[in-house]
Image (tube, one colour):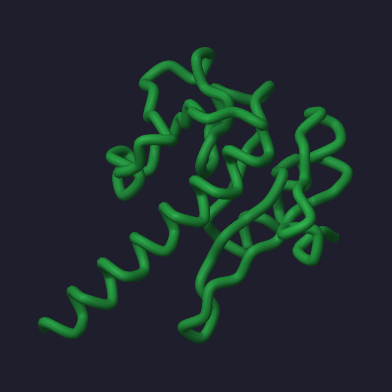
Length: 123
């Protein structure tokens, strides 16, 4: 039980660190406003990522939202990423390892910035 909780906390901490670094570099902003309908991510703990309840105030949508079609979406599941061609990227776990994918054409569409440290994840 303790190991499971520790693994979950580590996984969530890893995700928040990645989202913080990726989103602040993509938007070239110190604080990025995130909209999500996913309860797991409603309370992101980062001073650089702020949750908003209105997607019109968000810079990015974490997960899928039909209400926010005009915002860049970053998905949390490989199969959703493959289905939704308008997503800028995805982060998910496969065989216990973190996976990151970014779509170059969608990043360019939204006029976002990709830093050299994330270039290897572009497709």
